[in-house]
Length: 251
Length: 254
Image 1: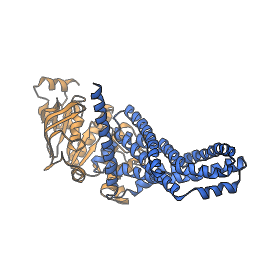
Image 2: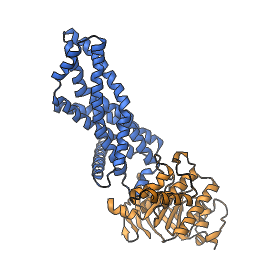
Image 3: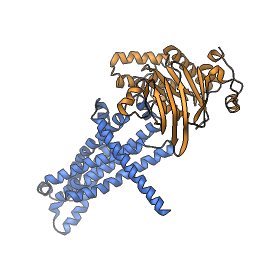
Image 4: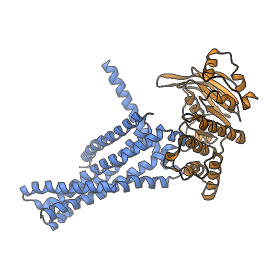
């Protein structure tokens, strides 16, 4: 579904991606892990054309997007939705208006149809009746939920999650993870998530990829990933204590 | 070493100017493409225009009053108090109206524009627009440019009128000058080209304010400090550009 070939990117004189190859399987949840500041968000932004590679190609389906601009790029972006680190809700709009925003702006839907779809999504993410609130009145977890509702309302084929649980307490992080997994299973979108939540991600992801020195050091199904013999990766994933496998990965 | 640095500075400056030009040109190009962002334009006009009215009226009133005060004492030395009206009106219409109104808009609305867009940049709201396939230049920037272009000339018109009445209040009501002479001298001295020049100035100042303030906000660096710097730079650069451009425009219009 999404394929990066030999992608190189230098930001502020620092090489961030160095000939990176990556391919995300369609309809699966792939999680990218790696050190902070290692370029995970940069990698994610390449997939949706927010950043262009210095060299290399970015394929979305059968379209190469790295040199696309304007309308052609927007056509590809219609297949995507992204949940940002801070949820990136529009401050000046209420939760309802935030979720309704893409429906009104892109699909030109009106009145009751917008209300129906927005209410449905807010209910799915557990924010029923919260539509009138403004982002400033929401907790971190609620913002993420609202951001997720806004991303899902357009029923995207591909969802990108940029550290969806950063800054949340463990319980809230778990509920966001559960929500992402439930939605992914239900709507079957291709999901790519950047996360630090080790070991939880091994339980919820289909595939896990490790970014190291600007390249994918290892990408494998979650259950196989934890068996890697690479000492550096082992150290990275076992720092948070013994890995408890459950759910998908254990199965 | 010195030459290297100078060269790097020159290249950076030229690059920045090129970026600024591309920024404003592509914003205008997006403005004329459907869908027309009518609601956004009205919202911005309300913010830049209507909400600046109070501060503009206040500055205009006192500017007119102090002009009359100064002018009256100077003109009296030559026995020409009757020309006070034309002195106040011409200074207002040709110079002070456009410049002071634009500076007030910079301070009130321009700084807020930079801060608003800057925060949207830092919190990835602008990226979010991009990912939704909505062009931020069209949705966010173009309406603000239009608001500057339309709002500032309207505010300048209010500034001129209030300023001239402020002058009347001090020159005639307070200092006892001749009211008839005040209005009469305005009517005989102010020509269409004075008004036209003032309008031209206010349109270009409106563009400068919204252009510089939007640009600085749009390219804010990702930190609280970056936002502070962007806002300061926006206000300083707009104010300086207004005054510099005012000189050149005046020299051409005269």
